[in-house]
Amino acid sequence: MLAIPDVISSTPAVMSGVPVFKGTRVPVQSLFDHLELGISVDDFLDDFPSVSKEQVLTTLKIAERLLTASNLNAIYEAAA
Image 1 (tube, one colour):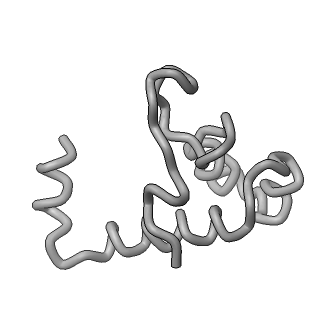
Image 2 (cartoon, rainbow, N blue to C red):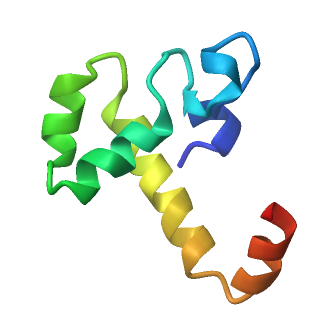
């Protein structure tokens, strides 16, 4: 599995610092918006061909690990 810096970047020069898939201008939020609407990962990848399937699967794995961590409250407090 790739690490966060290998998959997601956030710099003021690209999309005003919005987290994007590294090497693209595609916001990570777009993935979650698509999934929320019931759009499949494959269809997301068709919509954003600059994003790799490995980037998407790693992002989902990172989200899973964060949301199922035993110290979720501490993570949330640190991020807030």
